[in-house]
Every structure is written in structure tokens, then in C-alpha cells.
Image (cartoon, rainbow, N blue to C red; front, top):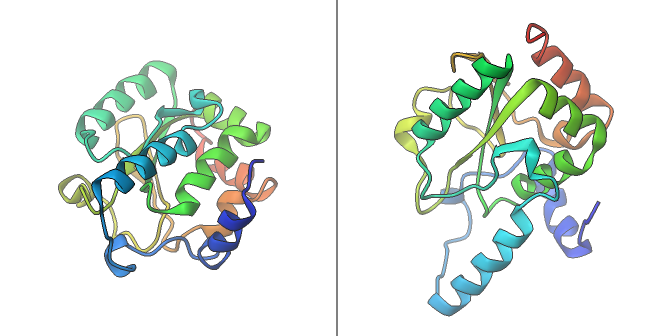
Length: 184
């Protein structure tokens, strides 16, 4: 796995409980040239090595989650899969790292590809997709996971942030197996 030592050191406090809302974090200071360069670097980092795991590969404030969700439902029905919504943002280090971990960990990647359509939904300072996310239980930390059936109805929404479980090579696959139980 490509963990940067500094990134890991910064991530340790939030790995247990996930990220807080960006509204609760240190205020953002944007300078166009710095923001453009940072955004370019983040986009390079956000794209998992194996993007076949993700139907929507980036936390993108310009994407329409209603359209993404409708498209995911069509794929889930056609391929007899369930849907996993992953709510987060490029501001959230665990959100970025979990995507990379899932894509690079064979046991997790195979289960996701076989049983799920995985959709990233942006929550951030430029677009928190409030209208779309209002149909789901409250978001208490990031990344936030929702498991949906083939019709897009919520089957599971862990009440607490899953934190370290999302990074556990042995434990997380058991969750995926349970969540995929009726898909075939």
C-alpha cells in the first residue's frame, strides 16, 4: 500500500472515528493558484489504482448524485448486485485512503467487483449534496457507508462510523459477505 508517512501520521487521529464534517474543521483559505495545484495533486491521489472497483471514482462536487444513483440502480439490477454509497470528500484523508485500500486489497476488491456497485457521493465545502443525502440517516463521520438494494432502498446504515474496520483486511470482507448475502 502507498501510505505516505506524513499522511498516515495525520490520519491516525481520525482513523478510529472517521472525519468530522468539513464545517467543523479548521476554516479553509483558498488562493487560486495554490488551490489549483492542490486540486490537481488530490485528483491524482484520489483515483484508485484499480478504478474498476468504483462506479463513481471521485468525490466530485459537480456530479449529480441523483443521476449517479439512478445509473447505479440500473447496473445493480442488470448485474444482480447491491449498491454501496460512500459519502466523503477529497478533504477527508481516510476517505481517500480507504478507496486506495479497497482497490489494492485483493480480497476486498474481488468482493466489491463481484457483489456491489460502489458510488462515491461528495460531501464538502463546495457541495454537500444536502438534498440527496436527506433521504438517508444522519451522517456522523466520514467516510459514511450506506448499503442499498437493487432498487436503491437503504438496507443498512451503520449507526457509528466504521473507522478502522474499513481498513481491516480480515474483518471488512466479512461485512461485505454479509451485506451481499442475497445477491447471488
